[in-house]
Length: 106
Image (cartoon, rainbow, N blue to C red; front, side, top):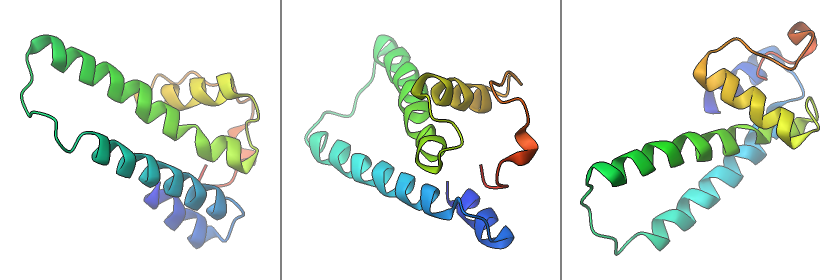
């Protein structure tokens, strides 16, 4: 999201606040996760690794949808989540008809 803030500053568009708020939410949750896991043991077996990878995709996509929702470019949570997963996996699938009307950061 930091790169997107830079792009938004460069083009002087209105999505800067959406990314800053989304980053604040993500950092706040990351801090809470760090606090909750500070006494966890640091060993993974194969099953745990699969769970971690799956959870990372789900959680990253969850936090990735916040700029769409905060900015208002996508108002439906399901559509924002789909668009985020589509972007992370680079499938090319999109719910947006015209991406050229969105700010450059988004």
